[in-house]
Image 1 (cartoon, rainbow, N blue to C red):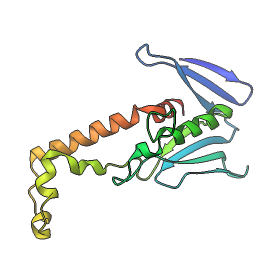
Image 2 (image 1 turned 90 degrees about the vertical axis):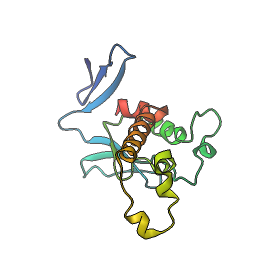
Image 3 (image 1 turned 180 degrees about the horizontal axis):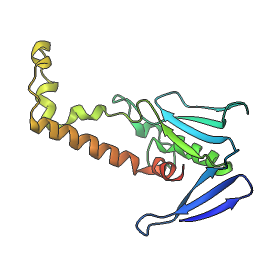
Length: 169
């Protein structure tokens, strides 16, 4: 890890994991306001906050689509996924004036796809509510749910521009 002071206010910390490519993040000085970005399912908007709160810049990002939306419809030319345009925009703001922190809150990513797991299909297609409510939660179903969430979170957090934002803020 290498620490590079950027003037009297903040420090850039460079690092790599397992001899991978180097990357960096910024740490505010003790007396400097923190610049941070947050993501949730809120509508995307940018705002600049006043100097009175301990925040200089706040960016709010959305990081998901509901099951009825095809994310690729939002991809646009040159992007690998429908998630990338909004994260590319945030990374451009980060390049202009680095954010010190990225905070996920609320529903950080949609997990509606869990109902497509083969082990859950009998429950999904059960019409009678009383049977559905009392359905036996087997080890096989628990394993399928765990498998889905583990794989889904790994895929989302290590993919696209979102992954770059995670390791730089």
